[in-house]
Length: 271
Image (cartoon, rainbow, N blue to C red; front, side, top):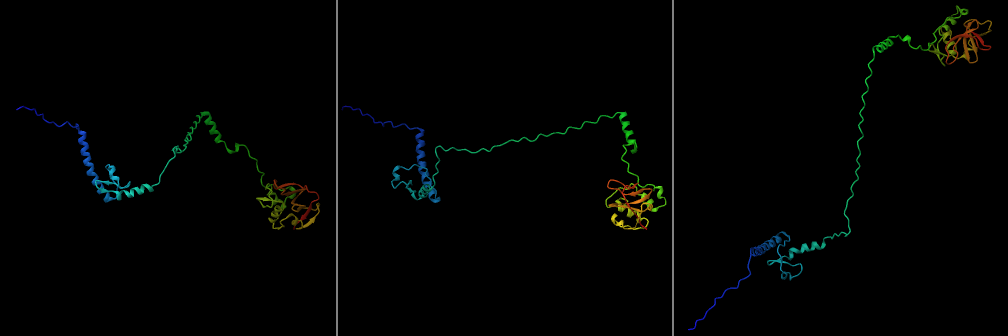
């Protein structure tokens, strides 16, 4: 018998596989399982979860229909699509510039602190200076600059009026200052002085010079005696004898004894 050689068959080598192919196969199986579970969870909570790609053939029912592993997700995705269509669209101009205003800050330096300089110590006084200061302090007040001496109060009555009580009382107030409206030893005007002196001997005179003009009897100058009144328009005084009188002259002056200066005065005797 003739012999025949039979060749054995061998499978053609396929595409070589790598570890990445095994990882892809395992990932696809896991995603399918996760898709089913996610669809069930989204259906129970009202949320939309899409974790796997859906083949183009699965969208045959419309743009808003979807299914994951046989689960219809149209009812789940409808509220999301409605929300997207009603949401406001915010657009910004291409040339919009964002910025903010920075506040202007001004630094003010505090005022400088000026320290007071210590007062210089007074120079040490010498022994001679100390002695002079002690001597000056020991000097009596009388050695100071003398002040203007006030006119002494009171004077002796003129000899021609010796024994006349009215003139002697009037002379006690020589030096008292003139005071308009005054009728006390603190100060007198002309009629206040005559009424005060006469009151010391128990005779009451009117307060004004014009009223005192009619308080007694008019006598001539030759008959006048010390203690009589001397009247002239706007003024009155006391006659001291020997052409002298005691009166309160005018503001700035004091009670004094002086000569009769009035022209044709009227002499009045009050009893």
